Length: 130
Length: 130
Image 1: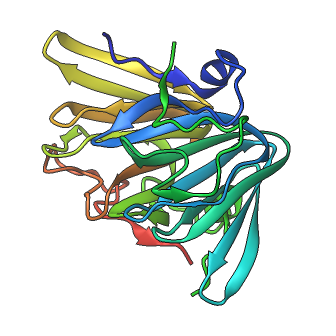
Image 2 (image 1 turned 180 degrees about the horizontal axis):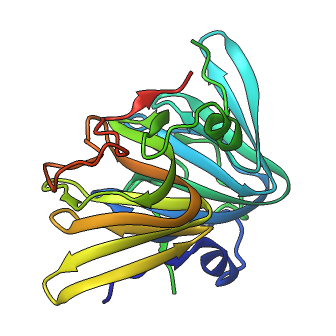
């Protein structure tokens, strides 16, 4: 397989499923995943890894349960945020939103511990891009 | 220090230097760096790590010396590419261009081996964002 640049817009246009990330490329043992999201994800935590978010379009909000209490960060298009390992969080998108996520290969979308996973959330370690 | 979302546009507006990346955030032991680039970088190679590029604006070209010969990949705005470890490469931007780069913390912009570094290229492991 030839190693060619990938258009994120084309990658995102190749699927419709929400909360179901596709692996666009890898960097060492990390995945670069893209996802379409809207509505609520689920409270979950990654015990052993940070999770990086970049908002490509729309707006992502991430509720965080921190030592000081619960708060929500708002990520407009073109902003980035890293959820620290061990921090319970729940992503939410008020409008159709496109995100890029970087985390170690094999990281589950619902983390190591999570609330009951609703039907609209894909519990996966990422799907191949077609 | 509170952990807040970062606008990539604001981060890029906070400095002028070309080929001189700023660390926007980290993910585990990786840096997420942003840089303004134009013109030629320098042939170099990272022996032990891949290097991920995302083009935020403008156009990045990356010349690659591969087993099959030399080629150049073209990354328009919104595209991504991973240079595999051990591949000699030279980034080049024909127009003012803004990029996001992800690589392990401590990775030098000029790699482990490189041609003579021209004055306009900053040999650095990345600068803090002010």
